[in-house]
Amino acid sequence: MTDPEETVARALQGDRRSQARLISAVEERSEAAEIIGRQLAPLAGSAHIVGITGAPGVGKSTTTSALVGHWRERGLRVAVVAIDPSSPFTGGALLGDRVRMTEHSTDRNVFIRSMAARGQLGGLSAATPGAIRVLDACGFDIVVVETVGVGQNEVDVVRFADTVLILMAPGMGDRIQANKAGLLEIGDVIAVNKSDRPGAAAAQRELRAMISAKPLAAGDWRPPVLGISAADGSGLPELVETLAEHQEVTAASGHLAARRAARASAEVASLAEEAFMGRISANGERLKTLATQVTGGQLDPYAAAHTLLAEIGLERENR
Image 1 (cartoon, one colour):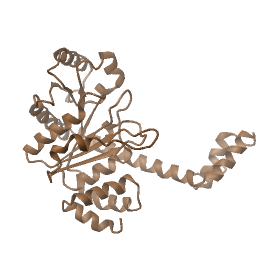
Image 2 (cartoon, helix red, strand yellow):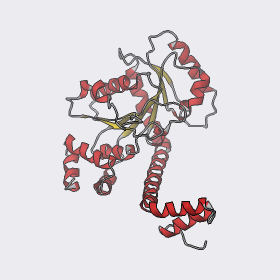
Image 3 (tube, one colour):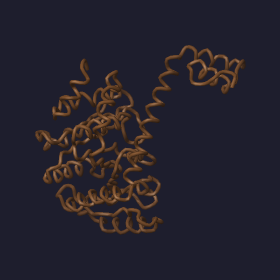
């Protein structure tokens, strides 16, 4: 990117190609990424960030596409960041959400970006926070973050979303599995998709019982459990209303501001960690020398670590 400032200006005017270039720069950690971040940071903070997650096969992409349609009917501009799993062998990804959401491809007020997870755990890409900021600053009212199909402990979406929608489906596992996955701990809204299938009503009752059994502080939001069918659209208007209600309630209570502060803290820590690891990688030969001394018994691992930190300027010697 030869002129980041000009690209930012065009992106803010609604040029989708420029918006895509900004996200690419953030994703690639190019030299322009910091310039882009500085220019966009004061403009972000108005969009409602909705995270959508759930196990593979529950219909995340179909539900996302249906929600985009409902938001557009209300005149809202919508962006989607869809994270696709990467091949462990080639590093490539199918990026299939662009195929599934072709009905919105000609809508100038809808932006869809697929990103590869590239081995990142937690169901997201490492560049997700930066992509969210770009789209937020560019004036989208809703930014949807659709995660990789997640399993146990892959719940990073809660760190980057204002509202987390958990999608489930009848027959996708018992209550023990739901608790083990940790999804009910992070969800703000629970939706049982494919509610026309046998067992859907029972699944909703069981989920409501599990959620109602958890202690709740006064004034806290208790996640509702809704039945939807993304395929035929049933339950979608109620889901859209519930997502908006969560945003309003948490904004009034101060929980939204706290969540956004935690999001910023996580992003700052991640960038600092990345810079730290970059400093270590740049001193790879010295690291090999210290490792040889450790295996030879001349140094213990703690002393070697302190030596390396001192040499790259992150710690004083003779601590």
